[in-house]
Length: 143
Length: 158
Image (cartoon, rainbow over the protein chains, first blue to last red):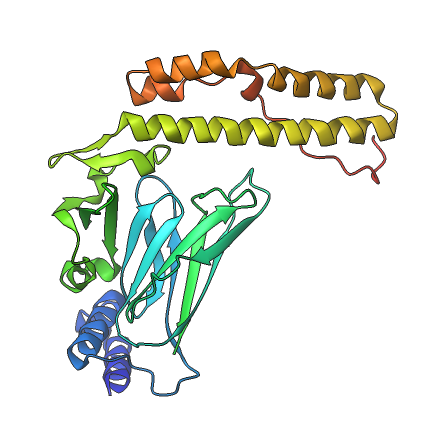
């Protein structure tokens, strides 16, 4: 339902350049609809429910691009929580990180027991197991 | 841009960055055990994340807890020393197998210099640092110059 409304809003925004609706406006409305409905928009379990690219530069990480994300939380060095615009008891989350210069390898993992129906907590560590801020972090959720 | 900061039960700070700059949606992401919840400007957050895990919220500004900061700096120096030592070791072997005995000796000397760092004295200097800036400036000279990148012994030197 909200997917259709979201698509309709998107089409409206594209069809009417002076509608005043930006891409951010459309996404915000769609997330609000999801929240009011209390569920995600995907009906097919094989579908991607949400994704985000986080960039870390300076004091505060930022969201480069996202879909169905309400916020990200910076918990510390290489430690982020992604909060989704939906709630599903069981979902699959995949994360990967882009390493920074001077670090041979970086990995992503999940904080034990920190997955909730509407969020996932991701950590970035280097090959020595030390938490590091990645250049960017990409998180995708299926469910 | 407005963001939300709060203090976790462990004393650390978490920072919520809303998607699409929508604070109303992001408020649902504040955990029940959060304290000192407040909205601030992103520009109020320190730009330097070196002591990120030592950030504390005084209620008005973000400060750095020196006890935690000393632990962070100690861990970073140890990690760096181990990393540099390994890299100089590899570099020495790589130069030896190329027949570059002068370069190999230089790498071995640099590795030995890292082993010879007076870590006890370093501890005293770290404990004596009164500010984050003074603390961060405590880096032994042996750890200031990055070792050259690892060289592949299969590549013939030019």
